[in-house]
Length: 399
Image 1 (tube, rainbow, N blue to C red):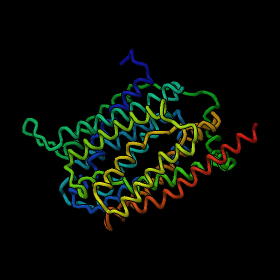
Image 2: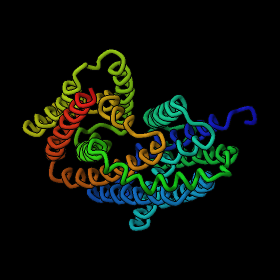
Image 3: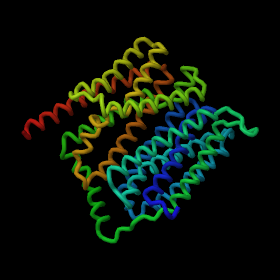
Image 4: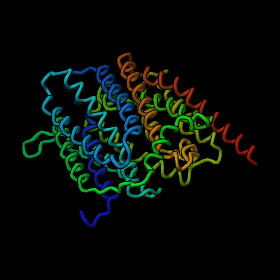
């Protein structure tokens, strides 16, 4: 490990952690269902965990300096390890309240760790290349975790049946490996007043955003869009296994294959398939998804609904340069890190609300998940079009 750069050690640590997330997070909903939780209860638990994560991320961004970030992450990883071990032994005990608490803690720790990885990297190096490597590492190794689960779930290895609880235990082993790597990372400590200056930047971040109409509306659009997405697809595994009667293995492989194709679609769209007209780009990404959701709601047909789900997942990573990049790049470099934290907070808040609504609609009927999502998408698409209008107007005024 001595010959490995510290920034690469962080990526290795993230790789092990992402495998853990892919392996356990993919089956967490089904594990809860096996422990006698209803879909509504599951959605409420996930929503509460996600909402409290928002508070945790905000507090860390507000009070934890970069110098103290490694110690904080070490402590959080220890909590997550102990908590996951507790979940393993709680399986099948019918201790429902204790299981609720541990699942909420698990979600909180997971989100805080994920959002803290890049700030930790910036204590060593900061550039666009390492940022791209961080994103690629998370997505790639999360998919590896999902792939592992999809291949081995339900199989017998050396007399051991690989079930959800065994996946939880294996995920905890990868978490230990992540923790060991973190202990071997040396971060650079700031000895000047830059930390205090950054803290002041954090304090003025809200004022900075509110001064820009475009940034404010972009964050609102992202918030509504996340609610829309989570309302329709916040409980994917439960939807696929219960409504579509997929086995857990088939559902996992379906999500993995569609996710990998989506990554390819995102790359192709960026290089070759991005229209010059941004209105057309938004229509392709969100307009077709909206149309699919409306047809799924009206028809109440499982095949049409599956097509709508598949398209929604396939297009999810495409055109981020138009939907997000143009707005993120407006932010001054001094505010980029703080703005990233604000985006995480708003996105997770939208996800918490969306999953909560998804659970309610799930109990009423599958089509209502997509019907309600379509209503949110009307506002999302409207805001997206208005933002393009504002940007075009701004360009004309500058010329």
